[in-house]
Length: 305
Ligand code: FDA
Image (cartoon, rainbow, N blue to C red; front, top):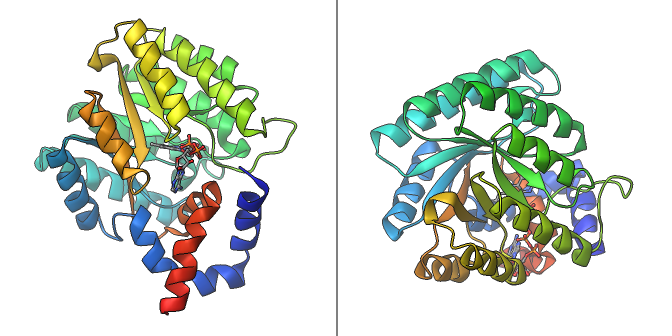
């Protein structure tokens, strides 16, 4: 993330700015990246994407929850999401942020909830991928997914952030514990002491981890919109003659739609990460910070009023 991106995050987290944006034009900008505020909105989008040939992962937005009732509500919403996925025969899994379920405040509650979700996902033949959040959650999340994977082999995945120095060792642990790995660059603002900073270094780390992941027996989820890294993965897939059951590409809803279609046309499985819910603000900020050019939509929305 560049200087401008970090500035977007820093300014955007100020309560006054947040109020101005969420009560103003931000809602319209969010529609580009978020399926809607309700489960029904998400299901409609998932069905359309499935009809177009994409797989889906549904993400009920929310993070750093402090109220235990809200944690329980989130778990309930995810259970309802899994039930709807089953009833509607959707080709979808769920993505969950552990701090939504209380990871840093009530780890036992979080573990119980997550276990229930993975159990239900298992019953209906789908999977749960745990999003990786910032450094405060990294080790707790790693421990949790490795434990869960023992009880539900093949049903649990986690995002691995290539910008962290620890990523290589984490990949080793995840492969050993047979956790499905979603490789990402990393979206949070982490200190220099623990994370790479330059685009080149992060890309090189992603490339090395992708090569290792594709060479392993684990299911690989390659989550990037970066042309260079996608080409590298495609070359690796071709060289290893990998079957479609062993990997997939993943991209975010609303980001590089043409490229999503092109990958599908080239015969790859492509899963779209579809966020929904009213807690869309931090998610939107991260998308804006990744690509400050997106601020143009913002300014246009402001001008239109
Ligand atoms: P990069 O940011 O270099 O983008 C490559 C190109 O894609 C850009 O040049 C631009 O054209 C386009 N692009 C990228 N982002 C855009 C945007 N927001 N708007 C418009 N165009 C954009 N991170 C994390 O820390 N924990 C997690 O759990 C996850 N989970 C996750 C799931 C999935 C399915 C994806 C695709 C990504 C994540 N991420 C994540 C986010 C990830 O870490 C990273 O921040 C973004 O994917 C952006 O990095 P790229 O690899 O796409 O490259």
